Image (tube, rainbow, N blue to C red; front, side, top):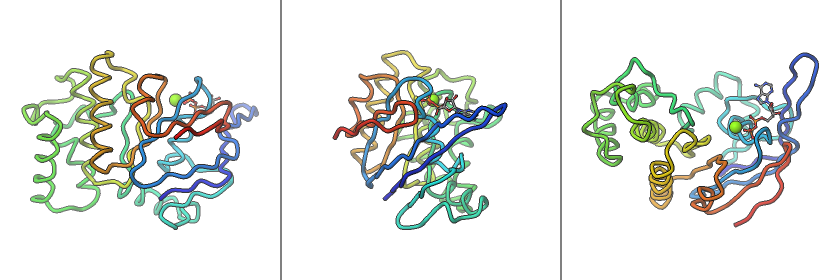
Length: 223
Ligand code: ADP
Ligand code: MG
């Protein structure tokens, strides 16, 4: 589904260049559940942001179902992202001014889906993730674990082709973190393609494939 070919990405701040990704090659198949691990600063988030079209690359190729995404204009990349990619972040990144329902509905509004279909989809997801009783609550009224469930529902709502999760359990107690991992594993078993960055060796074990990063290099892949 996804092929990265010799993808490099550097950042320059105050004339100092940091090579965050160094000629990365990576293939992701539909249905994969991949964990990316490695020390702080090794390029894990940059890899996820490049895959999510949040960061442009300096060189190499990014293929998605045979389409070369580098060749798209920034506007088209943004449209592609909204249609095909779901994100889960460490800090949940919910919109505080919107209710649980409205947060989950947002990707469907971006996709121009009609109201009835949106409501049906949001209700179904809230039910599936056990947060239906929180529908009209605001994010700040929820526990961290509940907020992450809302974020996962939002990531799923637009039926993206891939879900990118950056340290999804980084702000959660270990028992809640484990619940989130079980949930991601269940979603993967139901067909979702997931790439997750994690510091935790234990959480990486929930995935089917492991990618280890070091200094912008992709060290090894274990299946
Ligand atoms: P990780 O997620 O593994 O901790 P990152 O991908 O965040 O690593 O960072 C990889 C390298 O790129 C680090 O040296 C980091 O300082 C640098 N970096 C990441 N994002 C930026 C940015 N927006 N501006 C400048 N340097 C950055
Ligand atoms: Mg990171």
